Amino acid sequence: MTDGSSPDGSSPSGSPPDGATPTVLAVDDEPDLAELYRVYLDGRYDVRIATSGEQALEEMDDEVDVVLLDRRMPDLSGHEVLSEIRGAGYDARVAMLTAVEPDVDIVDMPFDDYKTKPVTREDLLALVEVLLERAAFDERSQRFFALASKKAALEASGATNTEEYDELVERMEAVRAEVDETLDRLSAEDAFAEISTNVP
Image 1 (tube, rainbow, N blue to C red):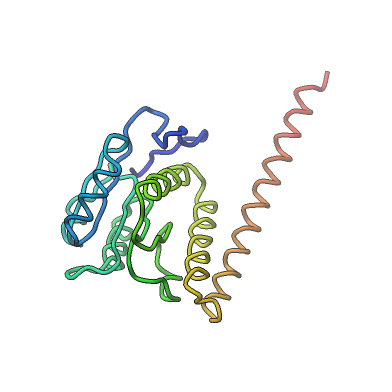
Image 2 (cartoon, rainbow, N blue to C red):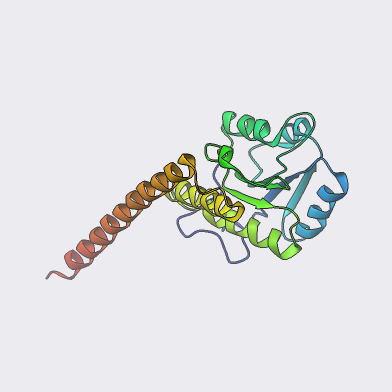
């Protein structure tokens, strides 16, 4: 959804606090695999599946909270679908769920997480829940977690001895400093407010 968050974040089950069932769009050009993701997630989430990039864009709307996106598809690639989703202004959290090992080309791709197939039911449920929880964070915090996911993906594939990886780490640390500064400021404001209320 474009705005499914609240200051309190998601409930432990990953559902939005207003009680609405989150919607997940699973995209994979292997129909059996897309259907398997539906089976994994059904009962906890409203699940839509698409077996091509074109169909994914047809299924996409403001009700979708999480997109699980295959990277390599015959018509539109996952990268192209991701660009279309972001270009249209949808605020869904997007995870690349793919057999393609990550390389430095992922650094500037606007996804939130990257998982290499195969994944278990537990992996998929945990991924969706984490993405829904991140949706409640502010933009800087979301950016930090997206960069951290890319860093972890590159480290898992051994693609760390590159300028792109070094730049990614620098960007992540810069965002971390911004987040820490905001938290420090908010903590100071809360402390000041508490002192003010206790002054006779």
